Length: 435
Image 1 (cartoon, rainbow, N blue to C red):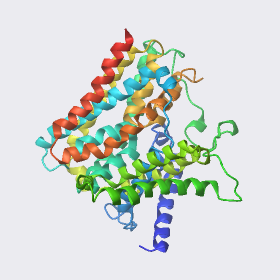
Image 2: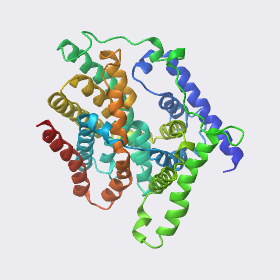
Image 3: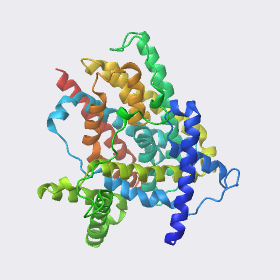
Image 4: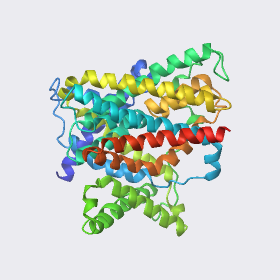
């Protein structure tokens, strides 16, 4: 691939992303489901591509976008992660429940995947793991773990992850709004007697002036270096530390590291670089919000190209077991959150449950959208709580590489055991702190 051909492929990506954005702007149902433009554009590209209508020849590089760019995403995840003990104590209950349902989804999902594969032989190995990342993390996380499997020689899990993520986002809003309306009628909501409608800008169009927020901040004068270039270079430098320096030097010494996915080396590089910058008091040169914006842009590329290249034959063959899987895992998530939130939150338990359900089946935006219907003035702190829980979870993102290797090595029950431990330990702590 030449630089000119890569530029052309990016132009094709941009066209479908913009088409997805325009379609979303004019179709309210897509807005209410919180389907992002990258998903819509990817579906349009899939339909227009050779697998369906055949009117557009998609770039061959689309099938490798996600596998390459996901290394950068994983590097960005651990960049600038700091955990404040006081904030953890403040949102302790939310964080523990956050981990509990994540562990439950992993243990149940892995088991369901193994069980359903016995009934429908031929499904990709380890596919049951895709649910926890598809439902908990959305299309971006599904793309990450799907590419881990792909790097380990297992095809198909990325396609399954994209489908499960789409089902999860839809369930987050359809099931979520059903729960909201039911809960309000039962008097569970703290601040409203009926779900509130959101302003039009919440779903589409441009934001009003007082709602517009910067996507990053400059930390140095533009006379020396462009601030975006500085942060992007730092991100790539962290990736080089992990992949170019550590991996090349450690793998010959420790052969077992040959099976570690490349993306995890980037995470290690980011953790090392950020630690060194903080020790030298140089972290002020990096703007974490800019790093996050770069990460978000890369995720748009990964999601659109991954959906555009989904193997439809695989999804058609295994549609029934995939839907059974979705019903069981999403249903279990709702029941678990209802029990834990009602029992352990002293106040605003319904608002927290709604946030966690939207988060646990779609993405954080789904949870926040649901909460806004019952807390229009943002009186509860679910947004801040979710931010703290996400920061605490960041180091556990390394499981993205560990779980697939365990499943491919045949260690099914060990993998389920890790998920069960992530579920049980927080639940025990919830009971301890409740006393």
